[in-house]
Image (cartoon, rainbow, N blue to C red):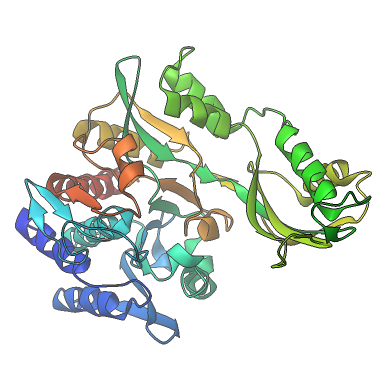
Length: 418
């Protein structure tokens, strides 16, 4: 069955009107009601009150499938609007000149609406693979109440899945040629807790062995540290698509990001005393790691950074490897071919996701996770960066409608090719 354009917009607008800042119950109730009306079974996983995750399956039974599953994933929670100056109420879904305004329009309720509508359109299609629709909680705050619980329940069913996620689908240009960004993996994360002990004392008095001096020395080493360039699969494909000359400043940064590890300073604690040098400084350091990076390599880097700095110690408190998705698979090629019939562009341009998404819990199963939630050319990549999590977040109605048609067509072509 075909879901009408107006019905797609109605579903999307209703989703925006639900405040899901820290409680997704109303959203999963709404989605569940729609699935009930179409006779589609679903399950709710609620690890804590109000933090609800919805999972539904269409298509082939896992035991009878001839192809790996396809997973449509999105998150239904949103960041808050505190201290923002909106020109419209942030949960109004007000439409102006074809643009629908509201918190979550770009991150990522438009993807939830598109995926839901595309699944409904394939309710009676004899797909040769399982099709999972997954709407999760708590992605914005680390996914504690979200995707990990879904993977615990369904992990084996998701193995080697083909996943459509957030993170890409935005128009960029280089040398007057258009491309659409598509994430094809995520960097890993290593969190390091650092403690620096030293001499305290008045800030105006010269003191040997100051913790502050040791802290500054370590920061200098971190700032000057040069990670080696690596030709990852994503980096190689990125350069192959663009050719030798990259003029777009954002794409130059992506070229570096795709091929290098990086440091990020997360938080610093130097105490609360006034006009007194602290005797203890603590901070959290994060290392963004290319896929394939092992803990032994990180330990050797940390040993090098801290060598000879007295009173400085470190401890790895969290380590999660990154992952890279297949850019040669028939599914990716079908996705690219289908996308280019709907959106202007020469090719899909692969990058690693800039942030962390729920895809990280699937990519390491392993499954193949591509971030492609396409937005029409009305909102380019630079504007997306300006709008996500910010005031007056909005998306054009055509993006939601066109994205539904793209996803539905992708399912049809994938089913026909298997």
